[in-house]
Image 1 (cartoon, rainbow, N blue to C red):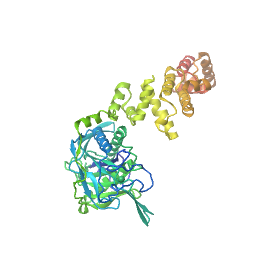
Image 2: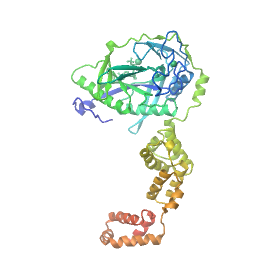
Image 3: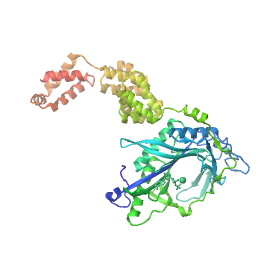
Image 4: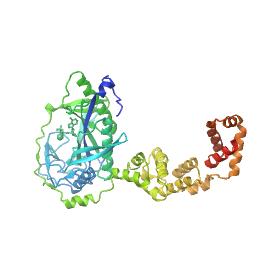
Length: 494
Ligand code: ADP
Ligand code: ZN
Ligand code: MG
């Protein structure tokens, strides 16, 4: 359970614990097509405002939409990845409302016949796997983008950039199966992972490729019936999702505790103020006057096409995690980290395939490689250390040719220079010293210099043994074979 960071209401943790949150997410994901959903305009992000527009996406009279087959294919891919049933027959509908970013006066979406229904996604949370139901996935086109100059202090001028208008989206609606902000976070994490694995979307939240609205209600623990929900919009980061849910749950509990009722309404997450605020109540809810889109044919997905798409699906994160645990004997936690992206998983498998034992390989990647990449602001694909070279280094450490501490130094140099381990070890004299004569000399010296500790050890204080090992390793600049140091010290001190 996530910690409630914003106790805005001052209700006690005991009272909070008497309620159970119920959460369902609606996620909009931008499909990675080159052109828009119903016209041939480019979807490229960051182009000059209004340069990627045409009569269709500007909603000019008489212009006719044509469905982008690739958008449909990506929608089907996403649907298959989250175990939805892709419908043989679905249909676009008009969702009518007026707004400057919607030049047609309606959004093309799907309503009573969505593309796919009835799926699920597994989330990992608190060391447990939980299956979250997914109600539906449907396709729609995105609105344009309003820009308000001077906002929020003063809005002197407003602009509309129609480049984004008409970009294909998939909306993925979950069942109300999530029970905490942390579970919602885990769900969005798992969903993003699957969408990246299947290359359906780049899921770039800063560019708005992945957006999330959260529906949330609370009920007394043990109650069967759901409470009245509020929908929280404008959650454009994982952190906002978690904070907004934490806030909203507390707000609802405090309303109920003071004898009030929850209004069914849409609320907005105010990032600066750290609270949700009413946007519109159900009373003023839009009546979208949905009706079947007359300018587009019904969507037909043949079983053959669906199977063809299914045959190109990659191994998904859940299956990969299980295989890593089974075949490589690594822990579920390690598997989760290593399977977090396809590129990282491929890297790990390449290290293992190059002959490194899997468990130490998993450690080296997670501790050394990921830290260095992170510090350097690099992606795994840009790693200066290729998998085979990491495997060679791991093999040297495992065989005792160099010790672990030296291995880390060698790795840092490999990362810096891109040179192979063997070259760095030879050039910089990093080889492990296993010469027993030399090791014995260091050991004797350290014992002589520390007669008090030697006496303590001989009197039965085994704790000081570590001190001696440390001193000898230091004298050898970390290059002495630790096993040999241990054996020699034991012999000389007994
Ligand atoms: P609406 O009619 O308002 O669109 P839906 O039943 O279509 O509501 O559900 C929209 C989203 O709200 C879904 O993600 C669903 O899981 C979630 N949801 C539905 N009822 C509740 C509830 N009582 N508490 C929290 N979430 C809910
Ligand atoms: Zn266009
Ligand atoms: Mg609905």
